[in-house]
Amino acid sequence: KECRMDLSIIVPVFNEEGSLPQFLDAVVSTFEKTSIAYELIVVNDGSRDATESILSSFCP
Image 1 (cartoon, rainbow, N blue to C red):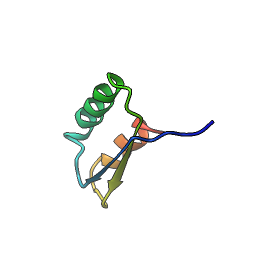
Image 2 (spheres, rainbow, N blue to C red):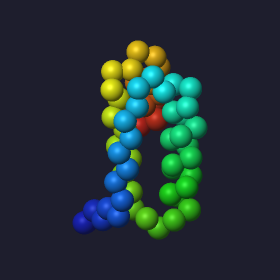
Image 3 (cartoon, rainbow, N blue to C red):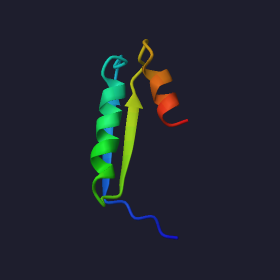
Image 4 (cartoon, rainbow, N blue to C red):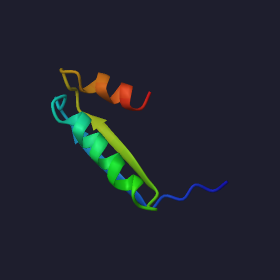
């Protein structure tokens, strides 16, 4: 099976525990309404808050 990717979204984050869950939910819910095949790449730039934990729980 061939994997078709229409869009790659790359997002750098640093100490974003306050806004990251809402952002991730918004991206997913937006693209679920379309037929666009996408990937979301989140780059954690050494956050010292719960950013890493949030990312891990979102996509284990």
